[in-house]
Length: 520
Figure 1 (cartoon, rainbow, N blue to C red):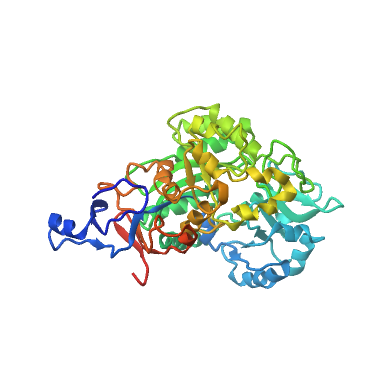
Figure 2 (tube, helix red, strand yellow):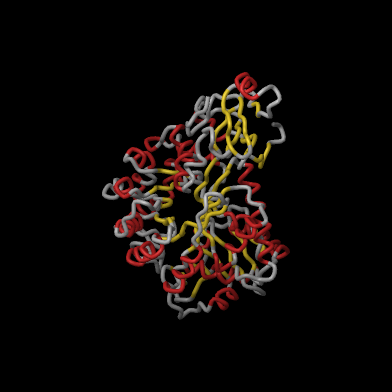
């Protein structure tokens, strides 16, 4: 009873031989075909489905404790003061103290965020990443190490926010924030081991959530992250299939960067680790008012251009695609605003190549002009809706910035109906890693909902296509690799409001059980 269905099946017995699916069907038929002593997995009435393919995660950013990398919990600036002070006890691998977790509006409402952080910690450089990862809060020592003073020009694609007197106020947006983390995360004698340990933890988390293949969406190779991934492959400690998206540094000279990236390409279906994607940013995000828009924001942060910013202009992005797609790279392009999406599509169209599987990720604001171009150009739309902020009932946070343009945000169903190849992913740690929260949110979003079956396919079969693995994984078929999971309920047969409560009971990757729930 083999099946090529992209979703759960009614089979009750699975036979795995070596690392491949050898049989899917009933226990009685399995015993008749293989004999009574064959080693089978009895599903005991549970549900079998392909392993989750999460095409947008940040594995090393989630797990590595370089600099402390503390996750701060709280609802106000006052709430995170003590956790940040406590974080100093964990600082290791960098002379910078690094942390994650605050809301940008907390800082914007404070008269002097730089002075406040100096009051808390002034004896070392400190950088705290905002929830979205597109801004950073730094103290005076950090600004000094970066060479950012009151007279500094903004870096290309970035903004140094300032107080009314023109002084840097400790808030850095986009490439300016990236510069702070590049400085904090320069390789040290200790950082490699910390990154490696963090990767092992992150892969355990992924297996626990039923994820058998990922695309790491931002491999900062100047921080030594590519070396960490390659060491894990050499040590045979990888527990997921991996496609790496090498980061294209917006502030690096093109010639040097392009030559380096070309040398790193590798695609070998027999290996777990592929180095075959480029992660590159077209624009920023809406609540920083840095997403690139066709029409001006209703309200922009002081110092931010009225229609947002570009990390890479359309012309520069087109040059990178032209130079690297012929090597074999697929592009993973961050595009949120309607102008950012339009320019990214233009850059791909200028380098038309039917063999490539380029994608735009986030795709939050698509206008009618560009909606059909995804299908026309063969561009994959990669959306993340696991975060509550992406639900239609919560769109009000965007109103101050884009007004009634929120009515056409996150056009998921429109994209599916247009014939575009649509995948779903987490963007962990910005949003939950749990794929069933993401699936829950895409089938419970009003007019832009899609079916449960479409959502499951987007996390399995369709994402496997994005990863160039559709001939080996993504569906339950005899002969395919044994990348699969067992879950406690069938999402196709329950009330859609209950999908988020689905539990993964077992995860198998490459024929090896990578996670098993204590009660299974």
